[in-house]
Length: 403
Ligand code: FEO
Image (spheres, rainbow, N blue to C red):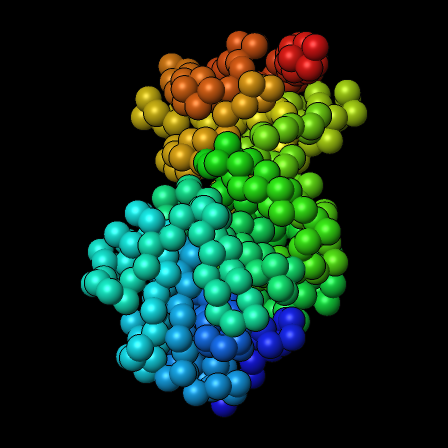
């Protein structure tokens, strides 16, 4: 029988660990994935969230370590996306009388749509509603669009614990269940990658959710228990501060250069652009799409002011690798009043690759203060040296946005 891990007195982690998952909807998960569920042993035995369906047996085994799953009285479904709700039907098979709580109206509707779970056993809750389960009175706060319309978080004042679901999560499978038991930089990096690839499109809504957390008061939160990754108990202030920075879309003086190349000309331009930023002491990262995954680039560009994207021209278009990256990036809505874009690339007879890149960057909402760098055939050393001036102009325009 698998282990349940106590995260607070009478509160247990009973989730599923997918150590070898390397992708979540195409986002690379080099540290695996955790599907967290929490069991609260009170007068009413309460389960907060479940797991992906294939981890139902793992979930029930961990619960069985503490209590017969048939005795579960309450299931709180903070979010109906299947990585958290997939095992609800299996739990209900065993816990025949369990009542299910989900946000009203979206969560209730989604429960019916996904699993046909509806009727008297389903209870819709809204922000400010409470549920007494014995010594504990749980409070619900709806956090719509962090990251589906139904999302909510559950706060237990008795445990000073916030069950935050997707918010503050990380795709990070680990034996230890707390932030201070794993490498700090690794967990913060995975929290950033998670935000960049999952939560980023909903920055304004997340900002409101973080404000609600602030309202509870840091002095009243000893544990943030998300539905992915480790629980935060030591670095709570740090992760909240990072979320505030990310969800406001704040950028710093940093440059990301993402590109692909056919015969090396666009690669030369990319390196010349990188050198231009380095000459001005701007931290820079050059990421060839042949060897860097889009989800890693999104993490790196989350708070980078300068985003340069390059493609040569192939059959009057940009390269498909660049088009795929831009489609992914655009969906994550990284627009920002202070972000500066630059398109670049080479061409033989028509500069349509870099021009199409520029069009997408403009449509995504980036400031595009300097002309696209489009170079015919193979750039000369003189051409490459001239790029440094162009980058200097870009930086000046970027600095002006700070005023
Ligand atoms: Fe982890 Fe939006 O589900």
